[in-house]
Length: 356
Image 1 (spheres, rainbow, N blue to C red):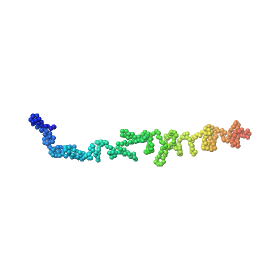
Image 2 (cartoon, helix red, strand yellow):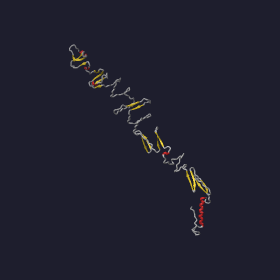
Image 3 (cartoon, rainbow, N blue to C red):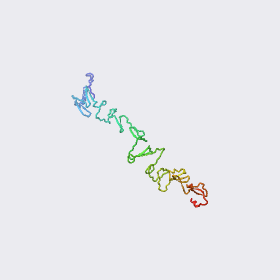
Image 4 (cartoon, rainbow, N blue to C red):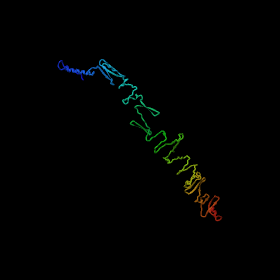
């Protein structure tokens, strides 16, 4: 309540002031408030109570006791005239504007926000990037770049996620080593420059290299739908159940040894001029498809073979040039052959002519 003042009037006994009863009521009201404020409403206690943040209460007598305000760690108190000053030692207590070094402190990231901290103010102001052999520092706040290699490695960044992968078409400029027991290649075409090298079951210094002669056009080699062993040009192998079509067998020392039946080798030539060298193929049988004659090669030349349809003139020691009706064969010892001539009318028998 506001303090009650007794109205004394303007001048003495002018009848405008409070009467005795009204003045007494104001005096009583003022004292009741004082007794209530510093007492129990009836009796003045003469003490002042103080409480701290933990609700601890202490009382100070208003009759001459002194309340001391003491500073704690990093806080000092001073009184000057009617002023009580509490000062904070910024070396001990953290303030909003002071510079303080914190030691052995834990700052909760959930309840605090650290801003404007320069990288140079941190003990570890960078991270170290290594490829296993070389290392480089990257400052905090700097940029760490992941670089790919054209046609080999792709690097894509999206919303903070870095994806490292291989492109659809990969070109490897160095050597590629694939370890394991199974390698699966799902491709329509595999292009290999130069050669394939196979180690074999035993890992040693001996390998098998699969290579090709430099092609002059596109070539296709098809492997049959069979299991077996590949026969090489320079290897010695036995072929079983094979059919060789349009083949040329050529060699100075090779032999053909056939002991089975129903074997066929065609050796026909269009005219004797097409026959091969008799000295190279001595003993060879050939058929002249133009003259319909059979020949066998001899070191001296191609010898015509006599068959049932042959003429007696096909014999090398018979000359039937100019033959006419009634002629016979007459031996000429000087020429070493039979010549055509008229048979003598006497001294000649049919038997002799037939024998000749």
